[in-house]
Amino acid sequence: KNEVEQSPQNLTAQEGEFITINCSYSVGISALHWLQQHPGGGIVSLFMLSSGKKKHGRLIATINIQEKHSSLHITASHPRDSAVYICAVRSKTSGSRLTFGEGTQLTVNP
Amino acid sequence: NAGVTQTPKFRVLKTGQSMTLLCAQDMNHEYMYWYRQDPGMGLRLIHYSVGEGTTAKGEVPDGYNVSRLKKQNFLLGLESAAPSQTSVYFCASADYPYEQYFGPGTRLTVT
Image (cartoon, rainbow over all chains, first blue to last red; front, side, top):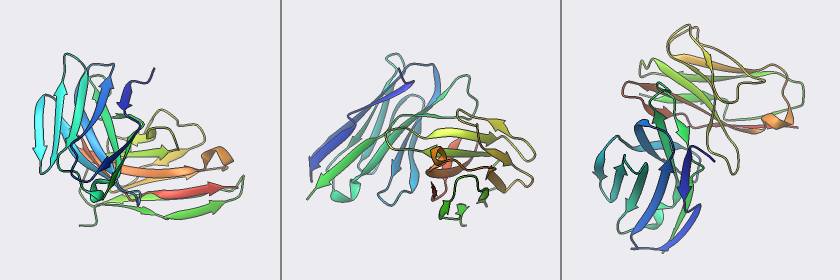
């Protein structure tokens, strides 16, 4: 079993829909990261969180430390949100290193 | 600021050839990482560095070597390339609290 599991693997939505991507992990963590990989391949960090909730524009990330679970929500989705969304955790024993999930491929159709 | 850059962007090697991938960052970050990304798998850590002159093995280090002679540069070497090393390679850098900044990637094909 991978340390970081994401669901779903693939997600197709219509423009305007509310989207949720889930991430579960099995180790004690210092922080959880959400990243976005564009169709061209570039990877950017969206959020880094260790508790509660963070919001940036139409993106919201939440984490429940007790349940070892995080969600990434996209409100009013748009075709430009189409990308791979990657969850990664920094465990309490790994220093600065991250362990990555396999990613969720999101396609938003107009 | 250029952020994190990688050279080259694409490369095709024959089995047994060697090459070096260069990662450069202009953010004065202490930590640097080399990952590989393969279809159906998450990013996997090859080697990393916690400061100038230091290197350490990651999850999949076999067949690769690294050097960090200057703080801004992190080099990844393949001494004798194998088809199993066909992948997309990403470099990243970070400083506390460890948000990572990624380079654009290098697509390597070994035939």
